[in-house]
Length: 283
Ligand SMILES: C[S@@+](CC[C@H](N)C(=O)[O-])C[C@H]1O[C@@H](n2cnc3c(N)ncnc32)[C@H](O)[C@@H]1O
Image (tube, rainbow, N blue to C red; front, side, top):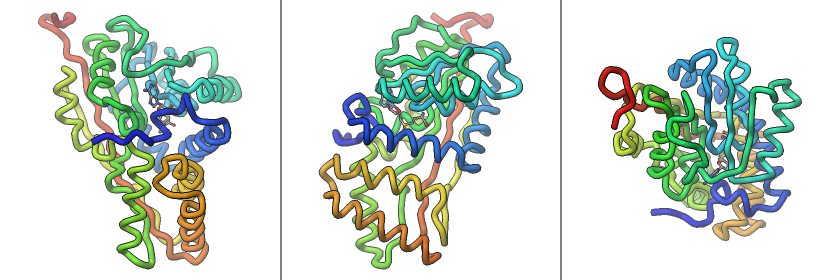
């Protein structure tokens, strides 16, 4: 079942106010120690070569691309592709500000149909993309196509079916969680499909990582999420602006009073495009 309202899957149609809210959220969560550790953990497992060419699909502001470029063991190049010209411009600006622009290239494009020939990259990352795309399996097949035989693919995302916030009334909390997920995530259970999708895309599964990102008492990671969601959710029609403001205000107040709870599971899968016989490209 897919939703048509997910703002993250139609960033080419959002106004600049919404897009700026996304920029702030992507950059804020990128600085959170657990979020950056999750990225580091699966990049380590991908074992990206020193001079590799890497593709970051659904790059947003280029968080993963910049993290790869900054790795001490890496002096290759990273190309980022995103649907939104606004986010691509932000990615270029942030890369320049961090002094890594010369090894990064950002461009607009749709990850369902990448404008690269077969086997163009040594590695590919999809960092919180698949939960938002129309057809995750076709995106994974495109990933498998543009990576060379023997190249690695890293897929990281929230298991957003598990996204939940505490509420004084558990029934109301459950209804609000469900409204939020349906407004913001096209494929909230996609990470549970990944073992099947990896195989269907012709990739070999190498590793799976799992984390719970939960905060109790005060909100930190979740506070920038709540602020972005407050602005995005009314666009879906699932909550009015007034309802979204009330939802966010209640969670902020929980945090101020030290009774906040917010949580989601996250997973990363590392896969490889198989080598053919004698270490050559299959087929
Ligand atoms: C949740 S954001 C993640 C951004 C970035 N990877 C990060 O972790 O900060 C999902 C990104 O995927 C992009 N996106 C969604 N659907 C896309 C598509 N079909 N083609 C290209 N990019 C897409 C959005 O524009 C957005 O930047």
